[in-house]
Image 1 (cartoon, one colour):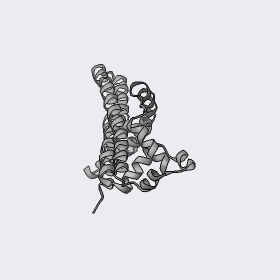
Image 2 (cartoon, rainbow, N blue to C red):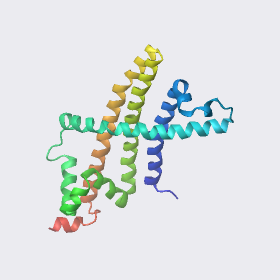
Image 3 (cartoon, rainbow, N blue to C red):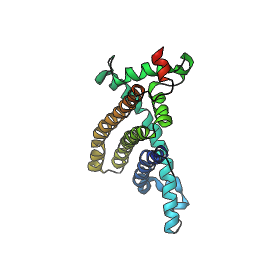
Image 4 (cartoon, one colour):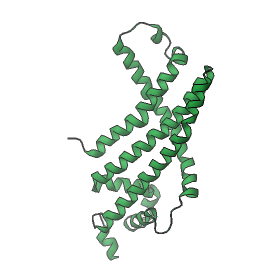
Length: 212
């Protein structure tokens, strides 16, 4: 039987990669499909073959959208520091202190607080990891959708569909807002789970760290 964490990795692939890739493929295919697929588009084929080609390109384009979307994280980091700075008693600071009490200096350089918190939750509390993975899937879906909206606006503008281009651009702001909110909540939720497990004495080495 699949674990919740394994299931939500599948959900992440679907929402952050395959679905945005499918939207991008559907938008690009009418105008540029023949340039990419060549004779594959013109050659008659079965419905199953058409779906196979569509899914392959949707998966490929989805990964490109995901890669481009990863650069948006830099904008998120800047805005997070300016709009929602962590205080000394925030969940982030608390989780960081717990992490620092359990690993040495070399390990601290290898992974940040969120990476450590997510790994600990997967190992110690799959239900909590499931909660974080769900929020991550949401944030990465809207991050990829932001890239897709920008791409769609460019294609529509190229085709002379001004209204469609304006509508596509209008999705950029709400997509970014939702991405920002989901991303911030996913990291904060991970830190809250870590603090709670630590106080309950369920983290490896917690007792030794408290005793020290």
